[in-house]
Image 1 (cartoon, rainbow, N blue to C red):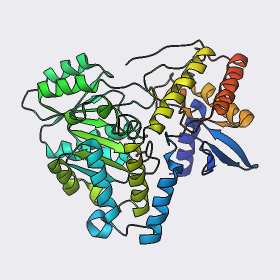
Image 2: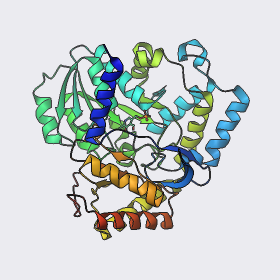
Image 3: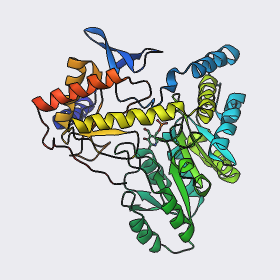
Length: 410
Ligand code: PLP
């Protein structure tokens, strides 16, 4: 069998559909984000990054960087093992305490990423709760979908943010069956925000556990950065909170927070927790510094929201097709993978603006888009450059659905 040929054919199919992924080779400049150097065969060139998930710029915060340097100087580079075999360092223990406190939970458990945390926790819970049925929002992230699949339990998919549909589906399952409702607080591709309180009402009514992915909200919402559940005053009603240390907190890693027994059970049974080396202590130290800072400083959150509002306003004034929402995410609809890539390629080559095209399977076919992520460190000038560039591109080459579209679905 000619394996190479088969693989080439699969790659060719992606190219034909216009969704072959190319990665930009970037070197971020500390102290100057969102400016970075973009490396190509022709050399390097300065660009402005408009699609980073280092939402608050914490990846260059002096306290975070100092904590990481200090940890390396004190304890060296790696953790030296899995959590079970010498990889539980004091940095990990301190970070778990901080995270439990952030979410008002008894305990927290660290993973190497939020993807792993979702996969490991949902699959393990499904196996630990025989006869379990998982109710999953149709727009849930790939990591939750993977975890639910790995768990092998029955699943029911409810319409996005639709509590009536969720209730109809909960009613179909016997009251005494273990149930989990898995959903996100901020949906990263549309920027929609979940009705957490209404979902908790249903969970209480039908005896379900709630599993909330706050990956696109931790650090950024709530008085201490606890996420949308904290902002909405419902953190205590959510059973399990999943978060990342990689986006709002600017470092790397993931976690869950919940009861002592829940964390103990996942710690004891989840393969994705047990059989992998723990995060480097310096990463844990950087994340800890970031969380501590954002617990007491709302400056970054306020500026972040202001930047998002300003960008949305300017895009609307230019009649560019933004998908409106109540969050910090600014999706600009294109609706065709080839066009989407052409627009983002031109932004990069002609204007020095880096935005990654978002294609299937990240979003459904026909809804390809740009996903702009303004941060507190994007200046008015950088915003004006982006708006002018997009305006010029749309004027020269309007996309098929290029009129201003409002697709809000809170
Ligand atoms: N959950 C959601 C909703 C996400 O969008 C992502 C990543 O983008 C993850 C989980 C995984 O987070 P991490 O990058 O920490 O693995």
